Image 1 (cartoon, rainbow, N blue to C red):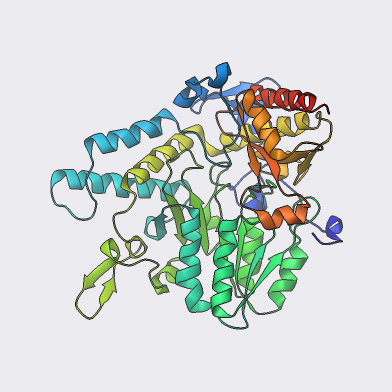
Image 2: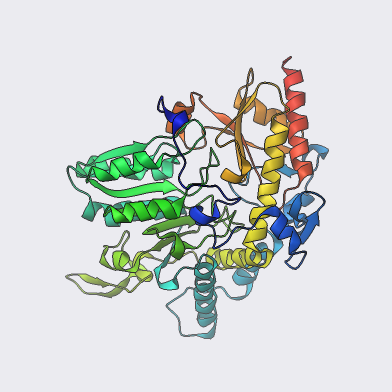
Length: 458
């Protein structure tokens, strides 16, 4: 972090509860009180006394019938992967048990059913974030989506003396592909600094763009360590005005808040299914049509071709040009069911629920002596997670002690080692909430942390 980091000014004149106006999470802000006023019209929504809107959907998730070690399962690791509602599990099983066939190949009825299920899921997944199905590409995760852009766009458009700009808060998946690209192409990789509250300085972005050599800026919508909600719309507008392109890692944002990829203005926006109540093995890349059409394929063979002869090949139309081989058919069906479930809940209510829990989480963490939370101090400026350290306890010990009480939290560098160096730590513990969590889960975590301090005589 820079020495003057504590004097920097966040993007946007004022923060809204979900970072809505500038964070690109919807057309209007939905506060906990707003959502509570809407009542229980949405699936599983109830009004919590004095706490705004809450979701009561734990019963939709079969895994919570488990009681490891005799304790109710307390899962606070949704930033790593979400649990799956029965609707998603049933969709996967139903497709494989009744409609399984390869897609885009068969004329028989079963194959046509598979085609319909796969492309129907794509249409619903695109609509969930206001994207275009033709520019909604399935990958196996967000990492592959970013690598696709780095390979297929980057190697054709970034050259010696040019630069790619990212931030210090990025996940390794949004660092290493650009390191490789810059190394291969003789370009430079530069970083926007994170200030003392885990946010970016707009003046530094402007200064970097004014240098005239930046070809692409890649950054997270929501940090998986700091929880910071970056002001995507403001950043992409600055980037485009400077003649550069933008790529946004939305892995933490899409599961937590309304996201409109068209309104955000990013040239590429990537997210992953398994964090958004869906299955593993599927990610999504949304791209600007003219860019995708100009790009060469990332992988070749199978469904991405239009024609092949002995001398060469021509490519299929979008999105199939970037979906070589048999695609993740069942996984797409499962993710389609996941976005149906999330849409029925209402993403404004999801954000309100997780914001309420994050307020409560931050407040209760302050009760633990020696505990330091990293990232923005206010829940309104962060997603539904808190990373922290406890003086005298290694984060791995914190996680192991929590597990003794059936509480699942993450510990480690969270695939963000450069950020850990900026924070001056090797690792943190991290608690993250989802639609199925309640205040009781946070209470269980705090009890486990207090008990752990006693075990270590702190």
